[in-house]
Structure formats: structure tokens, C-alpha cells
Length: 172
Ligand SMILES: CC(C)(COP(=O)(O)OP(=O)(O)OC[C@H]1O[C@@H](n2cnc3c(N)ncnc32)[C@H](O)[C@@H]1OP(=O)(O)O)[C@@H](O)C(=O)NCCC(=O)NCCS
Image (cartoon, rainbow, N blue to C red; front, top):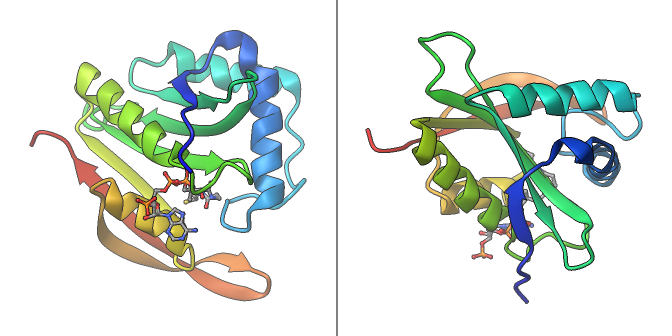
């Protein structure tokens, strides 16, 4: 089954909903940086974070919204701050359990590329835990290539896990 969530940029008044989404995805996946309940971000902090993304010319948070208006996934892209890196963004993506494998991630990456091309961002990059085969398959499908591997970056349930670095260049 494919679903057709609305994919769009986050609005400033959705910081609270974004915080809930982030908390839920962290509780549902071992492949994200923070463990369930590990960070206690306040509403004020998340409002500041969303505000920072919205006011940055080369950063964005894209969200996927289901028919009932619930946020079910996000993709954040943070652009470099220096002139020499402002063409490049670092990506984080997470979809709510129950909405995975339905094409939401694919749609978010499609919207990301449209946004990136529109403002001259030419390098998309991300890292994932070496065990995260589902995410790796999505990134390969979206045209990302592996560019390296950092050793033992994560400690997951008592075991060290490498980080796989991936990138995609647009129009270069
Ligand atoms: C990884 C994740 C972002 C993928 O998003 P998604 O919406 O489920 O992905 P899509 O449905 O668009 O799938 C796109 C492709 O990814 C691959 N894929 C997705 N989930 C997969 C899985 N569990 N196993 C194998 N391949 C998978 C498939 O190739 C799929 O293409 P296809 O449908 O044509 O076969 C999502 O599952 C998720 O949020 N997981 C938990 C958090 C996480 O791991 N985030 C990434 C951290 S780096």
C-alpha cells in the first residue's frame, strides 16, 4: 500500500507537534542518535530550534502530514554556516512506526531535492548506523552513494556500531 501524505515545510506554530513526533520516533527506533526519553527538550527549546531552521536560508524541516493533520514523519536538512559549506546540508529523517515502508521517506526526499535545487544547495549528506539496512536501501534508491565509514561511532546495546556516510551531489 502507498499512502499520500502531504509533504511540506514545517510551520512555526508546529514546534510542539514536531517535539511529539521526534519523541515518538526516538521511542520507536534504535537507529536514531538519542535513546527513548534520553533528551528532555522543552517546548521553548524546540520553538527556538524550529525558528532557527525557518530563519536559515539553507536549512529546512520538511514534514509529512496524514489525512487527519497528524505529523507522521520529518526530514531535517541543516545547511553549512560558512560560505565554503553553505551549498551542503546534513540530513536527519524519521518516520512514525505504522507509516514506514509506505513511501513517506521517498516523498520527503523528493521534496528535499526540489527545495535544494531551488536554492542552489548541491550536496546532500547523511550518516546512518551500519546495521540500518532499511534506511540504507532508501538512500541508495534516492541516488545516494557511500563515501566512507567511521569506526565504532555508536554504542548500541553494549556493542560498538560503525557509521556509514553517504552523499548525493546535485547538478555538478
Ligand atoms: C528508514 C526510514 C526513514 C525509511 O522511510 P520509509 O518511509 O519507511 O521509506 P519508503 O517507504 O519510502 O521506502 C523507500 C525504500 O526504502 C527501502 N526500505 C524502506 N524500509 C525498508 C526496510 N525496512 N527494509 C528494507 N528496505 C527498506 C526500500 O528500498 C524502499 O523502496 P521500495 O518501496 O521501492 O521497495 C524509516 O523506516 C524510519 O524512519 N525508520 C526509523 C528511523 C530511522 O532509521 N531513520 C534513519 C536514521 S539514519
